[in-house]
Image (cartoon, rainbow, N blue to C red):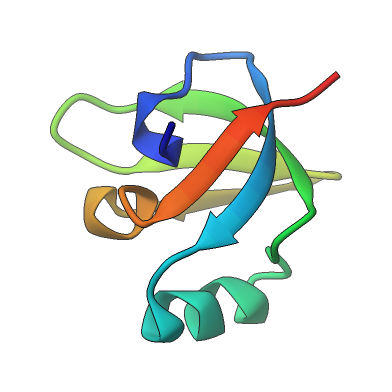
Length: 73
């Protein structure tokens, strides 16, 4: 599934980032393949807000659709 399909409060592991440009942007935020994030908020017709450690990051829908995730434990 992709990041935009996550549910609020769900812990997700990033499996792959399909677009090289998006991968570079995500790395600047400290998000990379293998990282675990928590889905904080899904804003209708807006960004997906995720939390990694104590940092919250708003990721646009276009970018979120290119980030493959799986439920984490």
